[in-house]
Image 1 (cartoon, rainbow, N blue to C red):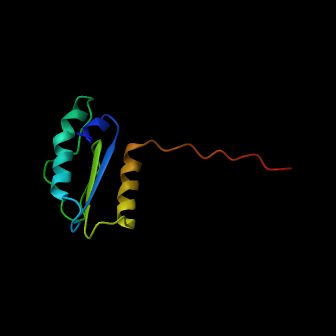
Image 2 (image 1 turned 120 degrees about the horizontal axis):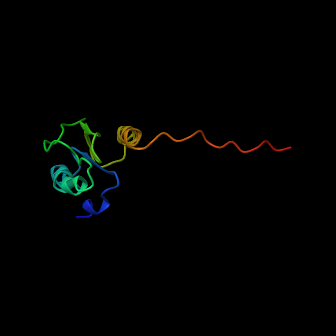
Length: 103
């Protein structure tokens, strides 16, 4: 239910194949089950109801997902997946404002 409350904003769920603290299958099922809420806003949810294999991602819908190999952790691979999703769903930012030089 918490995931559904995030609509219509983009949401992201990440799983690890050997994470004993979480249930990767249930996490993905939650993405599938809440997809209809995003559809109320004319957005796609997570897409196909088949969970991607290890190393697989879903980044096209408003709900992003990836499954990586390994245990519970935050890895460089996770960060790369997050950034790929962000690049797809958020407009490029304008160049950073450069403060004036000090005299």
